[in-house]
Structures are given as C-alpha cells and as structure tokens.
Length: 104
Image (cartoon, rainbow, N blue to C red):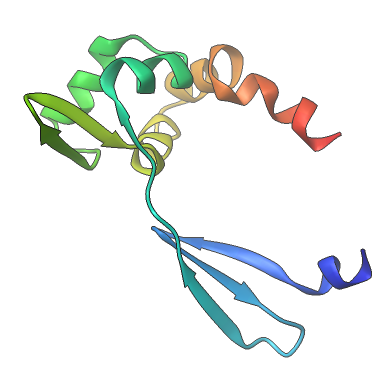
C-alpha cells in the first residue's frame, strides 16, 4: 500500500503516464473507449440529442463505421464537464452516481 502512494497516474489523452518516486515517467499506451451514440447517452445521463449536438459542433472525437457514429468516451467526459448543467447530469444520472460506491 505504501508503494501505491509513491506512484501516480496522469491521464494524457489516450496515454497513461506513470510517475515513480524519482519523478521519472513511464508511458504505456491504452486504447480509447469508443461507444455508440445511445451507449454514450446512457452512460453519461443525457439524451442522444445532446450527444448528436456535440458531434455536429465537432467538440467530441468520433468516427463513422457502417453509417453509425462511435464517440471516444474521454472527449465526451471533457465536453460534459464544460457546462455545469451537463456536469450535474453526468454526476446525478450518469456514471458519476457510482463513483462514491467505487471509492469504498
């Protein structure tokens, strides 16, 4: 447990960087999480229309496969935290409502 306190993770887009006690960085690549519009809306606690607005405004990263939008979840979290109203929906109705349970 003491070893865990000495290391920390810093999120940098799709790369996680681990710092050891000397301050050296060791990076390891992670794959971004791509979700459909409806999955993203369900996990985020907002309506699909909100997600589609973000796609239209190009504020989230997305890709189209077989005429379906897939959104990178990390960019959605950043988008939702920009406004208080959307952040509250994320924490009350989305995945944020489970954070306190995970911390225990």
